Image 1 (cartoon, rainbow, N blue to C red):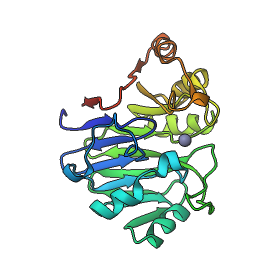
Image 2: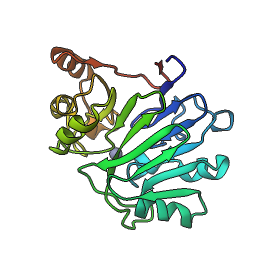
Image 3: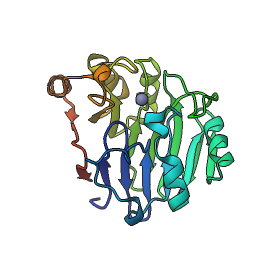
Image 4: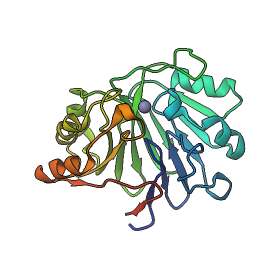
Length: 228
Ligand SMILES: [Zn+2]
């Protein structure tokens, strides 16, 4: 323990660093001068994409061309990346891929999925990462509240969970509290809020609601890194 970290790059973008790998999830940050993350100086071995909307697919093409990481996404989104000349693996729902950092499994998200060119991107997904050290990290992508979370909680009970709380495009903060219970997760990182006027959320209130059900809320600031 202690040699794995998660850095927040704003919105729904995270960088997970393990001993051998650097994993970007939904990398949309290069437009944001606040974000301190120079792709040239970072180890980027994988990009996980939950769905093709611009605020998630983000800088995949630029980073893919610069660093040649393995991109893992739902099948149609993966094919789209391949057609752009990127190295990609496309999976179906519940599909798991073994990687150098452990396993990543694509699970349901209650959302839509169009690609940057307007094409259908396949079903939207969430991702469950099981690192080699056994720690499970669940990134819910964009999703509404759904009973699927109960199944994910029963099967995987992820130690760390990133949940959207901004409403409008996803569930809101109150629903995310219910989701954290269903997911049987201990640590909750809120995401997908306060980026636009339509997704304003009160993160202090969310934090106290999460504490009230005996869990830990970690509202990460942009560039903040947690190590575990
Ligand atoms: Zn989004």
